[in-house]
Image 1 (tube, helix red, strand yellow):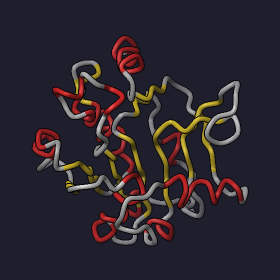
Image 2 (tube, helix red, strand yellow; image 1 turned 45 degrees about the vertical axis):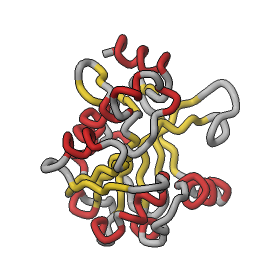
Image 3 (spheres, helix red, strand yellow; image 1 turned 90 degrees about the vertical axis):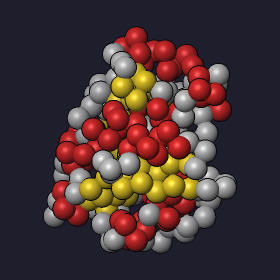
Image 4 (cartoon, helix red, strand yellow; image 1 turned 135 degrees about the vertical axis):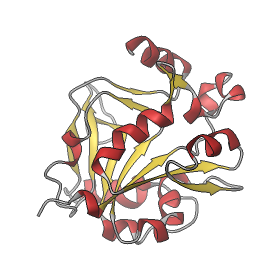
Length: 205
């Protein structure tokens, strides 16, 4: 049975330090950097919202401008001290996730695709990732992860509230077992983690 919108929570991961995007991130949190005059975090929230029952954004205490920007629109999880990483952020949000499956979107991932491409037909049994084929070894064989994924509720419920990543705790074990679901993107997808790619995203828009 396909997972319904009511069974799916959306989480935008926006607590990254943005070190690769300096000097721009000396002035703005990475997730607040604009693409087409809109903050990256807003693009991600808008892409996730149609497919989920509610949206949360995680942010670090070092980015109060980001916290204020999203507060009142979504649930906000503020991390202090060491950043929790992709899995730890979901572990911290476990009470809010409340047994739902999770649609996870990295704030610095700019994708053209309607995420229905990823969500439609998902049963919630195994992790599913949005990917692009590369002509060289990448994250999963020749498939490059594009920063958007679906995480089963049974896995989300086990993630610890401490620094850790989804790659090692969820995706790699599923990939090694032949259970990781990969969906190829159709449109443009850009990881805005570096200045060159951030510029490319703006030129694309």
